[in-house]
Amino acid sequence: MAKEQQLKTRVPHVLEDPGSAAIAKVYAQSFLDAATAAGIKEPLVEFSSFVTEVLEKNPEFDQLLTASTLTSAQRVELIDRIVAPHSSELFASFLRVLARHDRLMLLLSILHFGEMEQESRDGKRRVQITTAQDLNSKTRDTIEQKLSKALSFIPVLETRSDPRLIGGMVIQIGDTVYDGSLRTRLNKLRDSLRKRSLHEIQSGRDRFSHPEGD
Image 1 (cartoon, one colour):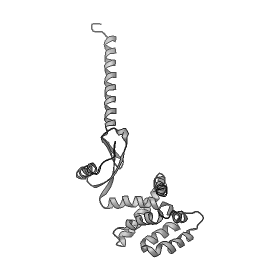
Image 2 (cartoon, helix red, strand yellow; image 1 turned 180 degrees about the vertical axis):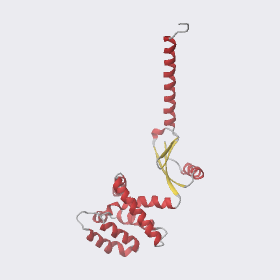
Image 3 (cartoon, helix red, strand yellow; image 1 turned 135 degrees about the vertical axis):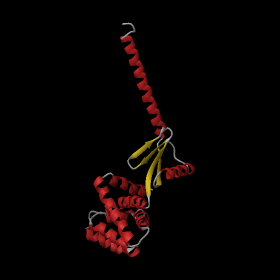
Image 4 (spheres, one colour; image 1 turned 120 degrees about the vertical axis):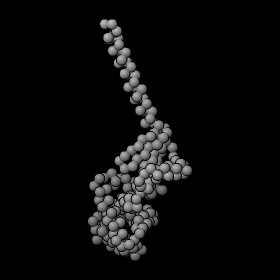
């Protein structure tokens, strides 16, 4: 469990670096383009399997691939000896390119962006849904169906819970946020009441300052 958490924490860390994220996006697109040209329909299946079945289950090998003590040539030799005999030539070649350019540490990030790019090419986009409590499968399906009818693309839901919302939900699509949470509604109501009270107080002051008939 600890090993899985360690591997998973590497993705956000890389994604927080704009430079590394931009590089990972380019590699992800290049990999998918090469797979399309080669007629491979689901190239990310092998990619994902390599991450989950090889790297996650053999963290020592993962660390060896990215060890600073190895030269690029030695990393390529490792790939040729251990990975290539059990993978497609496309994926082995891709790993060799990453090894020669010292980019193997971006593998998880490249897979992440590859999945997003593939979804985009399939007419899908990720939609973040935040609710006060975890959604059950029925509610999730209902939300997904409604969004599918309202949007011009196929939504891929990513859900999380935040008790601070109290109720309702927040929907984020890219940089656009639709906030329908109860917390936000209450905040807006509070601000409205505050402005109204200030207005009434000011109006009262004006009446006292300028009595009728003066």
